[in-house]
Image (cartoon, rainbow, N blue to C red; front, side, top):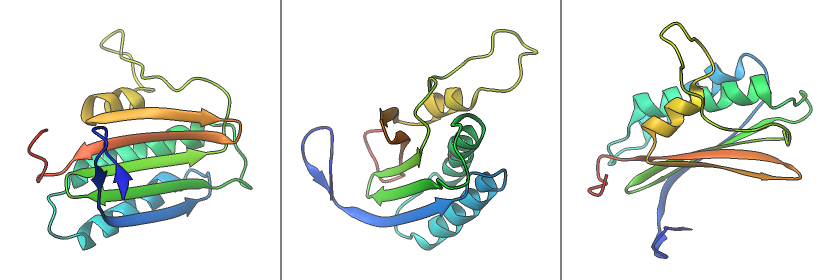
Length: 147
């Protein structure tokens, strides 16, 4: 169970917890694990393509920017309720900013992963403390009639 913004509790239908070494292979490993997990979750219309794109962006950002070492694995959590697919990624990074960046020119390339997160997710945010940073996002499932 988790709390919804309106204070009601939302039953969790399925979960995935994954530990990833912060290497260039981590985004592909996360996509593969989430893809397999989504195929096994039945009865809920999942936004699989969007989830795979955004999990790849979250993991790539952590690997590139979190300034963490191989001793501190990334922790990916996926939670599915009837109406929401929630992805969150924790890393041990505590420095820098986590903000979306939009292209300024037509030939401006790279660095827009969080802009995609902001545009494609129903809600997203960043939680940071002395131990690390968690970036989370929520996607509506096909059964969410409020999206």
